[in-house]
Image 1 (spheres, helix red, strand yellow):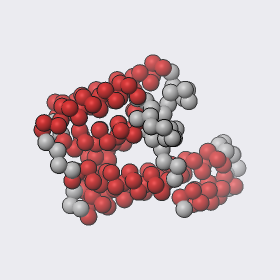
Image 2: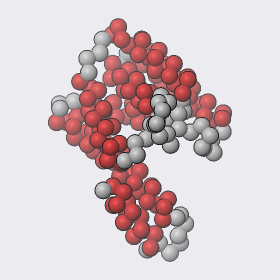
Image 3: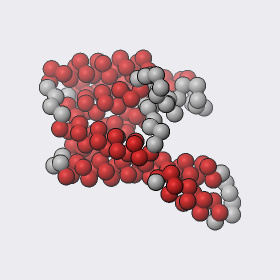
Image 4: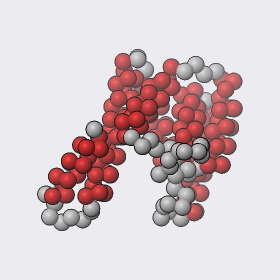
Length: 175
């Protein structure tokens, strides 16, 4: 559905744009990405509101998006699967019981996985320099480490959930 809408809208824009600065494929990809992200945000926040945890869901959404931009992660083949699974994870995290005793171990595991695997989907396929990739990894580590001071359970769970998407399981598709 999202693919079809993106192709129709991208084709329309391409046909009615005399400049043709970008290809139709690039337009379709950009529209598909925007729709996927927008629908994930709307569905997550709607679920958060319905479950009585709107503010917490917003925090989880921002935390996971921030870390994902720095660490990369698994991409589903279907935008619909991405929307449904991502929204479900974001909406469920505020309702997971989490004790203070788990804060430091979860942060250490998250930081170790970032050290080992981040940025997961950019190695060898980006124009970013290796220095820039290292800076992204260090910023991600600093963000996770900052929660050792803040001690927010929501952030700890959000960061851990996001970093699990960078693990290199066989058959996964990274982009």
